[in-house]
Length: 530
Image (cartoon, rainbow, N blue to C red; front, top):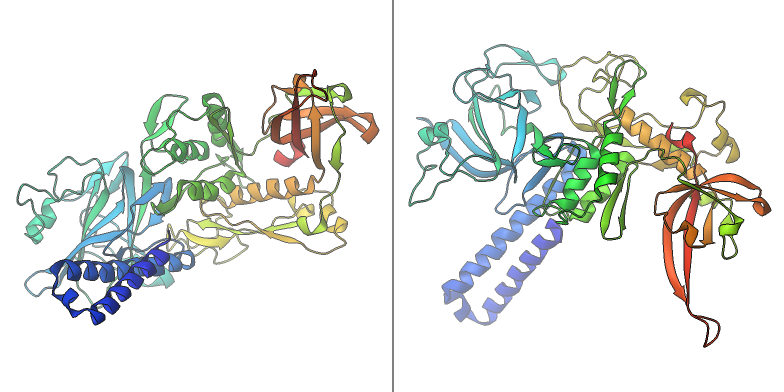
């Protein structure tokens, strides 16, 4: 159930209770009734506030820190700019000009926190002293330096003496309360045998000194976080931080807290093959390399695991299969044919359609990815300097993590083809397809997936083949060669979309039933994945 629907339901229940109270004033005298009524109103308003924040998120790129009476826990994979949930706030100081925040960033242990931004301005820490810590090679926290820095729009700022931040990463032991907060606000302290150490969650204590020149209003608070650090790599047996797409998908499948909870249910051989594909280093046109497929995303636990997987799969043009009680993870890559058959393997008529309907075809791919830098471009062409671009970015706002359009992809001369063949086949009519990514930080990964998606769409032939048990060893996503002269096929390359095994009754009372094996297949080619 979404936050908006859940909040509306709670407010509706509160309205209903109010109507009952109007007809029966005795209900108002009941402490239990009043408690439930108030909780419905407060909870409903909190849910609606959260829903409004979620609705704004796509336009802001990522979440901002918000205050809610009830909130879902956040899950972070890879590296993302996120907000958090304020679970405590107070003002202290002689003139009540110090604002104290306790902000939970994730409901699990995180690898590290890369940075803090206030109203889009990065906090540059001193790099030593109270509150500073180095975790997995990444330093964070403490007091900011006293230097002048340039923020969005070229404005100068200096956070020296105005900000303090200290982090806990989810693996803090019971009783590990941030002393700087306790010293500044005695209410945040162990009491009655209880300790506010926020166990199992990554959180920060943030103190901001009021300054109308720096903070004319309450600042927008965001953190750059390297997320879950307990992701299993079956190649080594170790757990740690990674943004490898296949390992992240497997973690969602296997994780019993935030995922499907099918522990041990992933086919290990294919899991390893998929992880290796994602780690392959792809050369970039401007030099250097990048991993073929990564996944960097943050979402809250209101998102069902299936919906999370549906958001992750497009980042690698990926597919997920459940075969023989095991999950198979398929990033887009060329496997090559694993078998070859001719018409002797057929047990029924071939059903084949060499063309798709025109309404199902497209010849352009547009979409967005999450640009880690802002502004995205100041001079020159679309590309900027984050290792994927031409170096023309004025890097005044690092780690923007905002949705931005990647260049339109088409199978044209600009992208290495002899001509814009598919546009010609479609009589010069542009047919765009939108493919937007929430998990992709690389503009080249976004275009790589766009290319695969387009060429898969233009490999039009599809059909169904009924085959004998010689083909029994093939499964979904396998590629094979088929020779069938009646259709002009001589080693035609086909990919299995869906295998089906059924049993057909015998034609007479003395004839045993027979097994029927059929495959829904699709044309494919190695050029799709080049």
